[in-house]
Length: 406
Image (cartoon, rainbow, N blue to C red; front, side, top):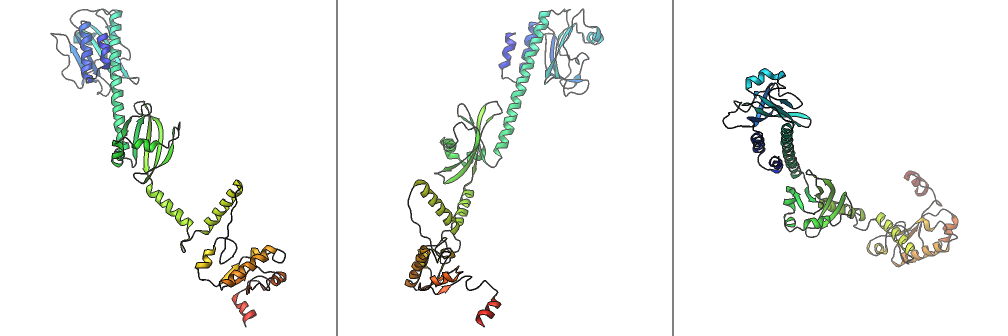
């Protein structure tokens, strides 16, 4: 039995292993004829001979390999043991015709389905099987079945790996797989090998890509910038069980450089006025609010002066506009005149702006004047233009013409 068990680790073609097992058993047990046949997939009433052995001086019972007649005793789900003096009743005529004096037939199952039979025959002398002999034959069949199962699993695994490799080689991203324990790379698809040939050969790529994976994280994605290439990549990673049962790290790498550049362009447009090329007003106000909040939070001091040609004193513009742009009028926002009659700050602000306008030879317009008190306060401030409900409400052009022009 030791010689038969050693066949479990034999990498020879499986047909050779089957013949070797049948030969070993036949010689040891002094049998006349031993064969392995496949019944699953053969035609009705037929079988295919996979392997056979016969003693010296005898010839094969079969005329060929495919579609040989299937004996009636090779249909049972349990082993059949026929000695010269017992167990022959159900198959007497067929056994006598074949010249079989003793027979032991064992089914071979795969996934709970009978696919083969192993037959051990004695033809030249009477034989009564002992319990030990039947146990030896049964153990030999179990070894044969284990070899068959292992080889099918091995072939299936190889086929699964080949199919998976083909799939991964045809996706539109770079993919590689590393052993979790050793960190050794054992698969890289065609796209990665072509895209990162130099980095892969120098064994630098994986350290660069995986440097941002959080410690202990089982899956996720990180954004990586490779300085040497000047490119951005999204790395998606996940620890999985590979087809051979190993725990591995699978990573897929996507080049997102164009996407990143487009995002930067959009951000640049969002921060910049498309007509003037100046800083976007909304972004400016947002950033100002952020800086003020940070200053308050950190106990810092600061000073900010914002001016605008329209709504002067609020909003976004700066003194640079007054210096560089050609304009005729500075318009002061109405928020500075609501409390003009009582607020000394508002009075001082308008007086300052009025002096500035006079110095650079432009006019000043104060908007939001709604009461006579507000109007009177502006006297003596060199304000030549005033706007507000104190004079009238907005009206159609025709009505304005009729009321004030004609």
